[in-house]
Length: 620
Image 1: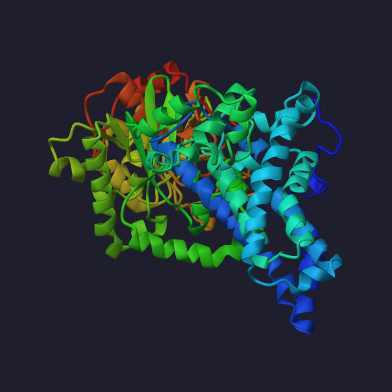
Image 2: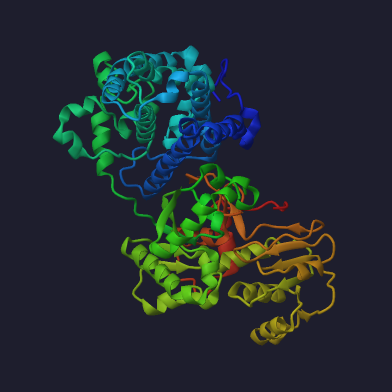
């Protein structure tokens, strides 16, 4: 909120949370009834138009986050953090407010029931009313909002976002938005008084204001230079993203709505506007030092990406599943089709760790597709292309992250190294740090653990060996697993392997995501389940405890962290992702893939030295 919230700062439905859309329910129900009874198309068209506004704004949000992650034409090189995401998560309130105005207006004003679809004279009057009264009134109202009295009570809330994104355009206290709507009503009133109102005029004007608001709050330059070269006076009639960005960094300049002409007339145009515009256009895409390669998990994970719904991306997957996502199955299935058609990685996030530039690239494949035999060739090609692209861009380290879950797919990345021994980029699967995190998650004084392997992966073997070498008994519940481990160990280490087919008394279990319900029921009450795979097991027991998948808390100097990594809490990073950062920072000049692993204690010490810290032993 503003520093000193004023009257009507809160939205009327603020206490409803995610149920705030219910304020529209009576009107939606009445519109359906009116349509069925009287065939009233105008009234029932309001809801689809509101949905269109939501989709239009969301497209801008996703585009902006993708472009700013890549870095080309970026305006402000500063970070967005969780506090800004939380502050801006009610950007859709203004759409609800718009809907209420439309519904009430349609109910109370009989004359709007018979509007023509289009009138040219109404379009001209709307344009003139915007260029004149709207822009002029807004300019002076905006300047008034920067007076310390109104600024501290209202407008400071909007200006808390120094680095803007399209969401930022709609983050204002209720009273301020109501005032804006009153100003934007001028063209509607003008066409109503002149009898030139039409459906298209009102609709297009709302779309125009949304479009310009989104454009102005992007943190990358949108408008190309050739447009102003063709018609130089256009610089007075349309603002740019960099023009309005200066208003958010300088505060006392560039007050205009969409047309800079009033800043020129009244002497409030920032003198660096043209320079910043030129610099932003010239800025090239960022070349990262470290790339974290990941993929989509569940079908609904597209909404949890940073490019998706920011409020969902800022919360762990398993704690932020929303009922309304089930209503979006047509979009979800369409995204599944896109993953079959679109065959290239895309940038979803950028971070900064000290001087290291980090990017996360996503492969457009879902988790289940990784275990599909006919998808393997396609997936391996995508991973290979990502590695080759990273190598061409001069990336130091590429971490495989979730991609090393199935060793049969590419043997933890070794297949690419063998085929391309000339690679300069170091491919890292992060196994060493994963093992280190798991070992340091086991409570001190533990003398026996159960290892539920499911499959004897590289990580499972390394954990079992390390524990046996430390004199801790490793219990397996499956004879094949027992034989497989024993065949790999020295006689001294194998002496600490135990095969147990009956109910186990050990209260520390190391598990992968294949842990079944029956296996969980074998554990005694109060058992601590510690996952070592990149995916968490399904929680079945209420009387047991489940830790996070291998991960660590990020130090404060990791910047631009405003989304959660899958099911992990805020500012927590998976061990395999951290491994890539450590690899680059320490300058380790070798790959970590195939059967290769680093010294576990050395990797653990490096993670602590660079500020990463273990997760508290609290239930995830």
